[in-house]
Length: 491
Figure 1 (tube, rainbow, N blue to C red):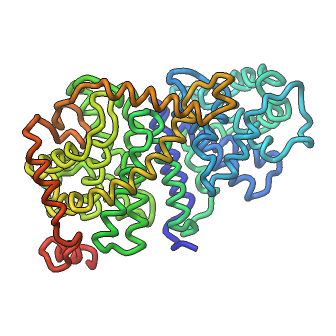
Figure 2 (tube, rainbow, N blue to C red; figure 1 turned 90 degrees about the vertical axis):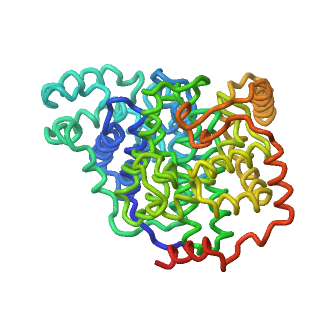
Figure 3 (cartoon, one colour; figure 1 turned 180 degrees about the vertical axis):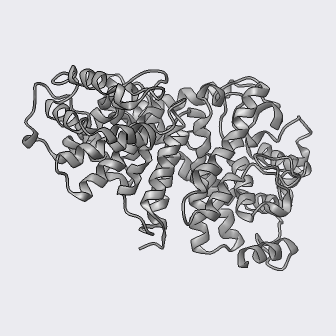
């Protein structure tokens, strides 16, 4: 059993706010859906633990939208089917998986309430609850809108919505202050979840891993990025001698370091040309959103700082806060190195992935510019093969899952999902192989790997690689860098 670190209420709120970033102008959409679903579950006589289940499932009900084409409305059964690809192997979210499985069913006629499984009831409640906030306008009193919303929902009874669910909603709709809560303070629904430290670090690792999919599965170019960063950062932390608890926190921080990127439009993430100043400013803000999302979670103080400061630079020219070396915690420095290491080994819309010599050159150039800490860069280069292998193993697993979930299956692919994934991966690699070498810097792209690269003679990289064969021990606890690191850990 892991160490109790924080509480479900705070984590649910942060994750809901992260999901809200996917909806432009909808600040509390997921809390609104959860609030109405909770009130309907209460009206139906659900037990307390069942009402908690409906809250959590409602907050995550549309997580599958990140692998579906944008700018389109989807029925719940399609969102549920897509969501299974994200939650399917997450143990702590198996209750959501079962609800998504039930939510895929398209009921004909009117099934009797008593004949339905609890999961099917949850799904029907959430399917209705998710529609109401999109009908509710923020520029008018909630009570002025109730009649029209009730009429619209009633029109769907027996067609898109189950009759018993509509009848339940109409009963709930008679309570005026529910509408005011939905419009003005839907986050009150979180108060119905348990407070106190009731979530372990192991549970948080699972939830953070799930959230990394929500973050990364939006684009094939980043489909396994957070996993790669997390694994690389943890390996660096292990080499440095960090404790088991600290390594677990590093894993969570790695999974969540890009959570604010949910605010960045997909078109910018996949743009193959130089970013405009306005686009780059949007990119620069995402680390600040990571800070906002994580700072309110009790027990996440260190995790949040590590995650949100990974774009700060030792020379003070990073973002979002422009911190200098003395103010950047060691965990953020580790993530910064792991982020660049992982990113440059991945294919991007504007360049192919880099081989070892390119990665080493990129790290050295960032070091020469004063962006990265010398000791950590040297440590990464000394342990390159070990870290790369561990990262590559986990990235391959995650990329396979992404490819299997994102292909457009024909009948043959449905029978052979592995073949479909291999076919898609092969076409992706073929496309990447045709990309030209890309020259960039941080101002032209806005991604951390682009602290980079004007072409130089690769003999420097070759010399560095040769030197590593006779490198000193991976971690010398007597050198000044190690002493500074241990001082920070101990204090």
